[in-house]
Length: 508
Image 1 (tube, rainbow, N blue to C red):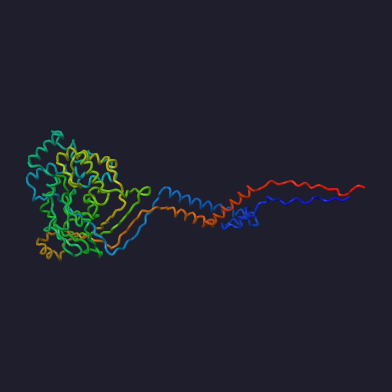
Image 2 (image 1 turned 180 degrees about the vertical axis):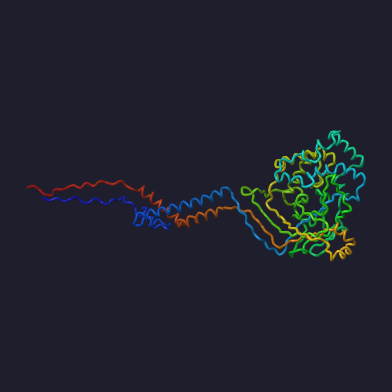
């Protein structure tokens, strides 16, 4: 008897493709460390390399997450650059005398008017004698209210008459002193300090300049002030750094004509106040001015700083912001026009230092309408004046140093040159040198901290550093994933093959 077996069954047809196995992928991928996990002979090394891969992936993921969060927060950074032009455009320089009114021009009625009203009217216009009214709100002082004016209901009169009675009496006096009407702007311009060719010696880059052609009149807390190079259409520049190569002013402050009195609330100072500012920005000498006393030579070295900010969501500026009476949008210009708008709407007139063609308010309207309005603006500045941050600005940092004039060896010559005595020169003369310390400036530009291209670079850099990943490595992982899915979907169930003994012997 003999037997044989049936033919062998075919091998398993659904065996996984080598390319779809993790071992094959780990040993062939360009990502670092995976081949060590599957290729190491000892388990301890497999675990070690697996932990390194997990640690690298975790660190890279955390760093990339932080960059994503910075991108979503719209974080910004500032780029600082030093610019070296061949020449720098010269800024505007506004000068004011510490004295408001020329005593020699005041009549008896003018003296009565100033004694009765000057402190009140100027406190209405400028808040107090030591700073412009909007500066309090700019720095967040919300408690500065109408009660802080030097003349309130409680202290204005001696108690015998009410405030309303005092105001009525005051207006009756003004009508008597000025029967043809009173104009505060006209009064200040005619009776205030005047800059002219008699009290000014001026030169720019060594060339003479004069008060009538090179200075423009402006009103500030100090009354009449004058701005050199205030016309933005003119291009004056400095092409050599240092003192004597910019603007040089010699001014006779004329102390013999001072009319300031402490009883009026006037300043006790003597000298010149000046401010260096952009040609397109209105002056705020009362807030940002520098003082030079008589008998001194002031050296004002300038450093220009340009800055630009971004629009939302990265910054707070609005590139489309414009002003009605200023060619370039600035914060101080916006504040001035905001107050101008409220005054014109509510009172129908404006204060003399504000821009625009509107009529100047009379003393009566100043007391009855402007005063409460200014108090309201002080208390609710952020609500009433929504001034946005300018997208670009120019700042001129001013550093001052002083030298006394004249020296003992030159006093006789200076007195002869000025046609006066040495004592009078020290009492009245001020010399100011305004110049660029160096012909370069700092430019700061606000920039987006994380851009889309930066995120892509960060992803590649982080995973490349900690795991050896590249863009092609990601494609390898995608390919492996696709092959695994195909392998799982194409896998067939195993078939049983029965082996039966076959008897080939035949019985006789």
